[in-house]
Image (cartoon, rainbow, N blue to C red; front, top):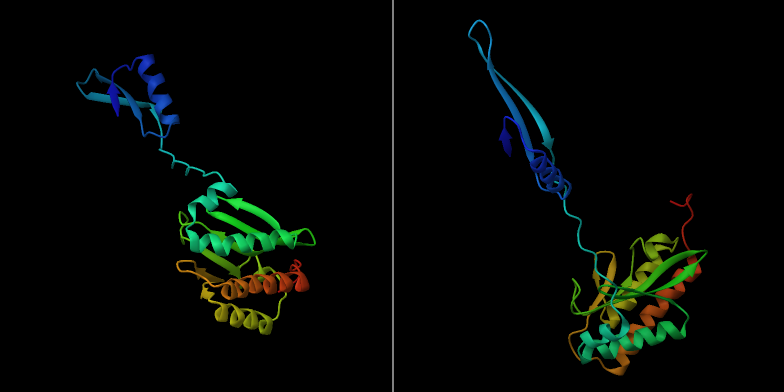
Length: 205
């Protein structure tokens, strides 16, 4: 806070600049005088005032494929390279994010997420995810509960554990070829369900 009988224009300009940058700054000018009856009076005027703005969170750029696989250990690389190759063979749409990649199917102009591969630098570390009831995937379809339960059972048998609206597998150990095949088959089953039941319309419950 800057208080004075008269605040110099340069100080006001600097205060206004700092206020625009989110710093809380107040400049107050005052005048003190006495009337004919001997009463002392003080008038004041706020000439610069601000409320700090919350800083915008820094945005992270999507990781590229080389950087992503360089961040994985041998366990994660063995599984996620197979999953990514499967997605490309099946013509799934691939998107990269700061934490890894997602594979999706396009149904009626809507992209539905099949699975995600996450790097050790992401929140959930080195993992493979498939959708269960998430609004990006199966949660946006009219897929029956019996199919969701079947996908969950298949995922559990392959080592995918329910985590909220996803099935998740921590890639922290060596996986056999048969185990990797089972994980890829879970992704295939999820993609098939998404394609079969499509995206919900606005009128769907």
